[in-house]
Length: 301
Ligand SMILES: [Zn+2]
Image (cartoon, rainbow, N blue to C red):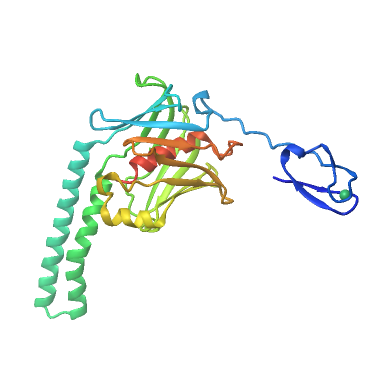
């Protein structure tokens, strides 16, 4: 922020911060002019929770051990900070998909029979057509909804380390059915709610967005794909070889950049959550870390 300094002769200078509070010679009139002192800096918000969260940069290293998604979190120097696990429940969710298919098939058979009966009875052709449409399109919807309704929720747990004894943070999937909105609650180890992070699927067709809210519903942040063109390309090429990876920028409610989440250069399965732009730590790092994991696992890469 430049220091606005006005000389007695009327000259106005916008000086660099380092000149604040200093006496200077006015280039116009040659007189002495004193640059005003800087306003006191707003206080840096204290990061609540475990001290492991009190930092600006987190490196997430994805570990390929077993079915669940696991990350070790380190600082930029590689010192371990936390361990994160998000179970996949593959067996149960395969069962859920079979359940969804069965429900869809049932819907298809039922409405196909109704359609045949309605035609035989000579009912209104529009009504018959609707039955036929629901037998097909409706069945697809029933498959998705039933499979989601039967699926296991995928909660995220942040532990102190890979011994998984001490919980630092929990992120719970709020609903099984995530047809239009996917919503997750971030809570401390004692269950105290810290934030709700959600995405609206219809908003996400072209450019993915995730929203963060406080426990009282106040808007905290928005995470948005950094490039609309790349994100469309990515959809079209289905993340071809993982080369068109997505980076997200995190914005404050006022539109200021708080940080970013990205895949580090060319290294696969290594992510950086960088919140250095948010030097006042207005964004709770615990919510930011939960967001990072959701951006990676919640996008169905
Ligand atoms: Zn002057």
